[in-house]
Structures are given as structure tokens and as C-alpha cells.
Length: 121
Image (cartoon, rainbow, N blue to C red; front, top):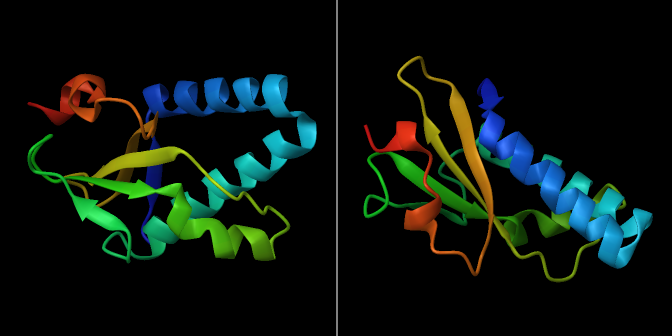
């Protein structure tokens, strides 16, 4: 497994997603979604080029996205069945060789407007 870091902006995204999920769907749904996000992060840390990981050069150099949908089965085995996840992990490999989760974004968002500033340098 590759070392990974979760950027502050991604941590905020996760906190907001989980708060919204709890408010709208309850604690159990929030816990399932939290496990799904964790499974997705572990999945791409094991293989950043896995099925569902998409290179996004139109957004930024070395940027990739991974929809949580592709980690549903793994998360379900851990008791976190989420039928229709709606979020992407936006990530890249750093120059130090670590995987960096830059954002966790709803799939209806315009990703180019949500890209972390450090990704476009």
C-alpha cells in the first residue's frame, strides 16, 4: 500500500459530506458512507490505477478521479452497503511518491472549479 495524505480541503469535504448525510439520512447512513469513503481511499492507496481511476489531464497535470461507486462491494463486506454513492475522490501522486487526496466532491460538481490551487501549479 502506498502512503497517503488527506489534504485539509479533503478533510473538510469529508466532514461536510458526513454531516449532511447524518442530517438527511441518519447516523447509520452516515457511518456506512464514512466506511465507504475509507474503503475507497484504501483501494486507491493499494492501486492508484485500479478500475474506476481516471486520469484527468484536462483538470490538472497528474490529477486523477475515483468514484466511490467502485468501492461499494468492498465497503459492503465491511457492513457499509451504499447503493448510490455520489462522490469522487480527486487525487494525485506527490513528488515524494505519496498519494494525496485533494478533494472529495459530489459528482454533479464542475471539477475544474473545485480543483485545489496547488494542483494547477
